[in-house]
Length: 119
Image (cartoon, rainbow, N blue to C red; front, side, top):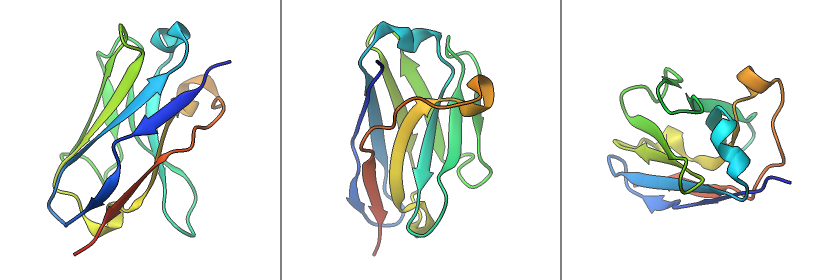
């Protein structure tokens, strides 16, 4: 069964950058449209960026557009999220999973990686 392991989070100041990684356990990863999700305290999990299976097309939530870049390396079964110009409102636990908009559902969730943006 597919498992995801997210990493790369941390505590940073506003304006800083972070690069998140998500390692998938199975090569099935390469057939899935994937997404990065985040959940802030007291809020529902939201989808912030998506990428097609081959990596040719991406989408972003308005709140992160122009600051975040999603990418993938199918040879390494790895998904990335480059986050620039971070804001306090980006503080959340970040997760990767297949794109629920494409597949209708997600797979098992990993533990996520905490991103905290604070001065």
